[in-house]
Every structure is written in structure tokens, then in C-alpha cells.
Length: 527
Image 1 (tube, rainbow, N blue to C red):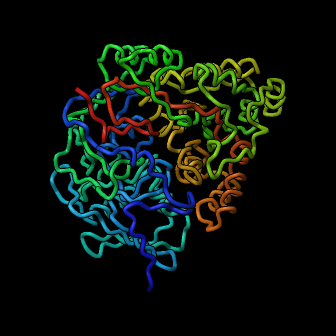
Image 2: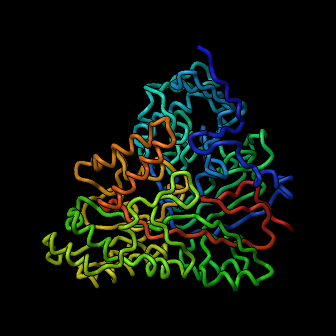
Image 3: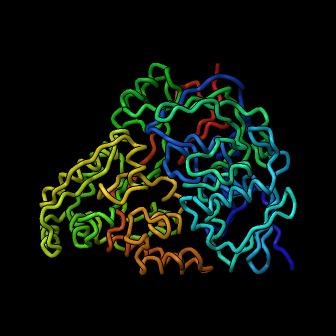
């Protein structure tokens, strides 16, 4: 069979974007490490309880783990699929067979060479327990013809397959084959990335050091997304949890930490005037949102969910949650993205307590408690829940906050169908990756909204299947719009608005570029 050879050290997926990739960020990095050595402390916003990326969707986990682990494919600066541990990819003419050749010389942190058996074992573990394991549903089987070759055979052609396996919200990180049977959260943190683990104290800090055996991908001088030439310029990096915004910025100002994430808007002007500090920003970084629990009364009642949605004033919520740094966004995509749609937007930002009261009457609502599960560890999540609860109360809804630490709150939302009605979070890479990835959390089997029987709405799923598999981009865009409209109608999730990522570094930090997740490769310290 004639094969279509894609030699890409870098691969643009036409399902995501047409034309050539922009490598401006990478090209600007004429010299990877201006200096090697030094210890950097990164001030994190949220706690993390595990580094097992197969089973954890928390942004805090990605911020650390994506510097330790690597993937067969990843996303570039524009969120297009590109090769990572794969050196090349052949796609058969019928679109069903994907043959990856691995980059030579790659080693795990334990010194063992990377082989196709490790890739197969990692895919097998992900298919068994991975949060986004439905991304592998299109696969009929995979093969390992030799140590350097990993071959995937699909049941039928799927235009969005590379989007699925390169997604980085819950990425298919490659781990040693002997870890393929590790139970959730029991994975040993042994990767192939530029940094290896030194110490992990849950909810406190993670320390990593340069992996001297790392083999960078030198096909590109520089980094784009998590692809390209990554170098560990620093001796060590300590990711330290500093959940309180004031403490985080104070630590930066004193030089106790060198980089902080999520600078409070009110602190930005002061920090920008400090000659020892640099402020950087990613304009569209996250979608502030909540999703209900369909298995817990009274949010098992559609009319109650619709009443809650009708009661909300998104502008007031976002203004309080972001100190004014936001944009209203009636979509599960950011403006300018391929799949951006305002379908269903008539149900967004209704600010209509009278309509809410009428819907509650139709629902037979009798003042049952509605529990809003949130955390003070992420001030934005707490403030969003607090303002939403007051708006709900104004419409006659008995709203009550349940405030837990972030790992416990996240774990409860994932594992428990009782005890909570709404969970508050921010979708970061979920939204940025576009297409099916933007709605996968609401589709089988992920179903973060906990539908009865763990089966999502069939009308939504019909459109999601088209979005995931149609070879026609226009049909996929139409399906996205219909699926999004269904989400609003059924209140499967509620987007409040888009937020930027405002970060800051000490002036002696070089090479740090804000992205959806933290990259400490190619970052170095001036003396």
C-alpha cells in the first residue's frame, strides 16, 4: 500500500489549521541557554496531589508534570498537533494506519532506553484508566514491529485522530512499560523529559532537577508549545504552592521566588513599575466556568438548572472574580478559534431573576439546598461561587457554599455523585485546544456533570460524534455549534467568561514565555 510520508519533525494537522505553523517564538530563541546553572523557585497558585497525568486534569498537575513527562505527539504554540517523542509519521492512503518512528537515543530518567513497548504500555494504561480514554475509541489495535516503531490501526478513518492523541489536558504521557498496570495515582514519576523528580510533598512543593541523560529534539532550535528543542538550563526548579495571591506577589517582590503565576490584576500596576520585575501576559488563557451534578437533587431537575442559569449576571461575576480583567464569552471556544460559535448565547448572561422564579415554580422547587463546591486555594473559583450564590439567593434559590482545599474539592467532583450540586473550575487547555477537545469533558465516558447511568444527553452525543469523526471541517463546525447550543439548553456546564493569564518574573529570568501551562525548559538566570 502506498504510504503518505509525513517526515515532520513538526507536523501541522490540517484538521486544526491550514497552512504552515508559525514558529516565531522558537525562531526568536537564537541561543537556548545563555547560562547553565542556578536554582529557580516557581510560585504556584494551586495545590497538587498527584503527578499521574493519565488520571488527573488539574492545571497544577500539568504545570509540573509536563516538564517531567513527554508524549508521542503534543501541541505547538498555536495548539496544532506536532510530533514529540515521534521522529516521523506515516499515514496510509486509506487513512487508517498511523506508523510512528521514535526519536533515537531517548532515555527514561531511570536510564532505560525508550522503546515502542513503552509507548504501547502507556497507551494500554490510558485506555484502561485515562480520564479522556474515549480519545482512543477509534483505535482497532496497535502494533510494535520493532523497538523503534509504533503502529496504530484505526477501525475507520478519523480526521480528528491526531487532535485526540495530542491533546494535553489529560495527555497520554509515555512511561516505562513496567508501569502499564499501575493503578490510578500510583504511577511512578519516571519520564523522558528534561527534568526529573527529586522530591514531591503533596499540597506543598515539588522539586525537580536537570536530567543529564536528556536527549533534546534538535530538529528545531527552540521550543513551541511543548515541542521542539527543550533544554534544562537550570540545575533545579522548585514548584512551591503559594495559594494566597498577596503572599505570592510578596514572595516575588522580595526575591523569594523568581516566577509567579496568576498575578492579581490589582497588583499588576505596582509590579510593572518595579525595575526588578517583568510582567508577562497570555490574553486568552482560560474559561471560568461551573458545571452541575445531574445525579444530585435538585440539579437533577432540568427546570431548576435552567432557573439557576437564568438568574446569573455574568458581568458582575467576572468583574468580581478577575478584578476587572476579563471578557464576556458566550462560547466554549475563544474568539478567533476555528470552532468559535455563539450558538445558545441567548441563554448566556440572562440576569433575569423573575424568569428564574417562574422556572422554579414549574420545577416544583421547595427550597432544597443547592451546594456550590469550591475552594479558597483558587481565589477566582471562590469569588465566582460566592457571587453566584448571592445571585441565586436573589431568585429564591437556597444556595450554600462548600469550601474545601483544591485537591479535595477536585477529587469530590470527580469521584462523588452526592454532596454537591455545582463545581467551580477554569478550563485552560480544554478550551484552547478547540474542536472536540473543548467539549470532551461533557461527553461519554468523561461526563463531569455526572448524568444518571453515566450516559450523556443523546442529542449532544450525536453532534459530538460528528464533531469527533467527520472529515468535513464545515460539518464539524456545524456540529460544534449544535452541541454547544444543547449544552446551554440542558445546562450541562455554565461558562462565565474568558480570563487572561498574567504572570511575572524577576528581571534576571530569561527565556520564560507564558503559555497555557508552565514551561521551565529553556529558562535561565542571569548572574
